[in-house]
Image (cartoon, rainbow, N blue to C red):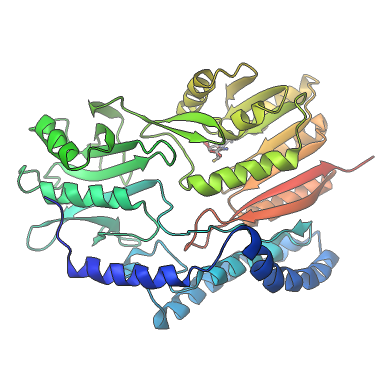
Length: 461
Ligand code: SAH
């Protein structure tokens, strides 16, 4: 029942072969040679200029212009380069056709431009193998004009499904499993769901894979709870892919673009997977937030912990903590950690993770990070180090004001959006926190996203 090698797949294989040849980036030694030589020298020249207008760096930056410039660059180059067969319709990878080293240079330039006026920006840490890094893969199901099941992604700004069989940034095994499921539908008489007529059963498939554990979760999102011959379906799927460790049916009868519904039935296994990150074990359920690039997440967290330079005695805050990942890694080297997170489910996961790892020096609070810090500040509480990892919209003045009152010696800011990072660094500076050094980390190769970790310390009064 394995899917046949279609011409699309062959085309893709050729594409990937060429792409692999172009990936010349190596982390340690080569970084120093290629990235330092090429980027940092130029960057330091720019640094001189940007230092002059430190304070209005963010205001001057024209957001729309910059992001458009990045996207056009990708598209222009892709015309004559090696590109993924579905890249135009899919739109997931803005850097298609751009060599990996050039992608890194672009990201370095952007970070330098945005925050180079505040502190030294180190060479970006890229991936040795930047392909197939996504540990979470989602496919929407539909049928083509002939009525054959297809799966893939929604075409940008529409609800048309672009068929995708293989993807260069998704986990290979996950794509294989999705292909198998697609191939099984006819013989099991399972119809894919039609959004217009609201007829049919299977809407989406979501796969999560533990990078170290190898555990695999398959979530079958169905429009109704009635799933005929589900046990045989799971049995047949597992006969082809015995590496699947858990299968979940998620019921989503809503007409929204949300992939997952509220109700879940575990069809096989324990209903979650576990994985190890920086020596801690995390339980990941279908809805938990978990970084999608495990290799680079370790790099990012290790860098954040290294910058904090913990001695084992500190009182630490992990703000915007998600399921408690950074806080738990820090707890091994600190006296006490307090995590704060808005999402209730994530806080539940954080508690069970702490228990699972026998950690007794970490606590979690559910609520807005800014309000929580205000409470701590007005209670006269002291902390030594604050890790902050806000969403793309960045932090808030309330949070930063309270932080300034508490006056921790060090702040480690982890950001997935250099634009809001620049804005927040300007405000932190006003409040007495000087950025010292920044490391861009490439968590999302082939896309125009870039992560940064910045060390700040309190200016002496
Ligand atoms: N540090 C975690 C999660 C980072 S993502 C990790 O590395 O995995 C950002 C997190 O901030 C999300 O979990 C989101 O739910 C949370 N968040 C968003 N707004 C928040 C707020 N106002 N207060 C606290 N947490 C918030």
